[in-house]
Image 1 (cartoon, rainbow, N blue to C red):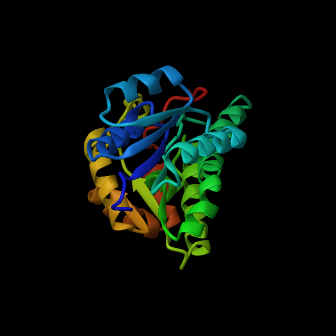
Image 2 (cartoon, rainbow, N blue to C red):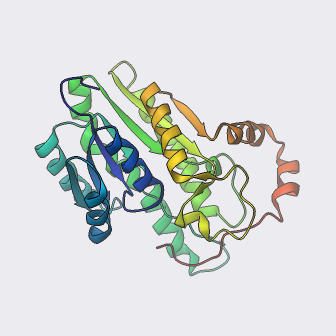
Length: 259
């Protein structure tokens, strides 16, 4: 990041949960922020409580044209960002057997995966031209194996992990770092509805602090908290037959269209 000016950070899904916690963390460190979310009123309320100069950029990350417009406004005001965090995400329980859940699959994949692509796309060429920057994708431990009742969410996060790896390789040697963050459970409105135990649950502000440290270090892959990193490694190598037996009766998020 440049030492000549405050760092510039764009965050999607900034109006609540982890996104708002990340905004508070970076604002406290003097960063100038671009705050992206669908709810303009929530963005304005957040910006009003933050120290420093920030832009509210109401947009749906699932709309590529809206994201291009938000990116153009951000770069027109603050220049090419130092960090772009594709954090926006939705989650809901889904079951393929129900026709009405197809709409939920579409919404989750469009927001969590295609929204990440739409978030990064306007910044890749400017960052490459400058020779620096960090593109940060918030994936999930849920993307490592397909979890029952969470087909849409697991698929979106597995897709995000693979997409981020592809992008990282594409930008190798350019000076632009691609950082994949795979959180475990973070205390947010998204997880508040989960009707099952959530091991190693982190407060949002602590998760934001740890994520920001991983971003600053330019890590390719980071699981937060570290205990979930051990779980992630185990999930990767667990034989399919054992995985099926252990997770067939796992707790499931309630069905219904995501907000």
